[in-house]
Image (tube, rainbow, N blue to C red; front, side, top):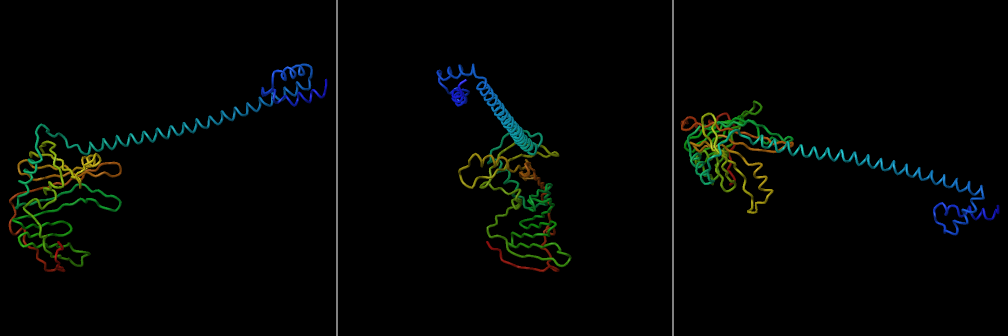
Length: 323
């Protein structure tokens, strides 16, 4: 066998294996390989090496695809878990909202316009002689900030004079003389302080409107009739009280927020007095209901119940109110 031909054939074998040679070259190579054992072995070795490289590359591709599929599977599980958690959270919040807002059986067969609701409230707010006990049943805390504390406060009112007594002390309001006195509770068993000032010049006190819960504010709130409910033999008009927007453009978001956090009030159908309010807040993915009751007795207060506080024993501080 011509060694020169072998040299040429061996130089062409890589291209031949990769199918890069012409037909005439292939015929020449194949004729030579039939009669040359050395070149045939070279070709077999070259094919075996290429096969090995292909197997290695295929294995790398398979391993790579397995890793990709594994990562995609992990991401799919994580994504599904997150989506499931989000859905469950939304469902929980919605169910929690309707559970918190549920007030038992309410008769919704009747109807009242906002004007009729305001007229009923107007009737209740004009009472000037009453005893009122305010009871709050819910405490809500956000970090170190107390939004609303459990309280029990008493009000004694007669003909424009109101005495409020609570754990913090007592406040005396005299709308006839425009005098306001705050008498603090004893501090560290050392002393008590009394702050004497004047009432705001623009006060428009009539009666029960003195209290926020029974204050009619048609400028800043909407009143929407819900229905009627009987509690302990009393009939109540149940109303949603929603905040009005600061401007006239009341968008979808403002409407949603207004509905979610509207206050619900229970108005005594006979007296027009609000005897219960419910306020709703959202914290830690749950709605909380803050309930305040007004225990009211009418026409039971005497002059002695609303006497001006005796300030002997107090450190008295007098000031003019900045109107």
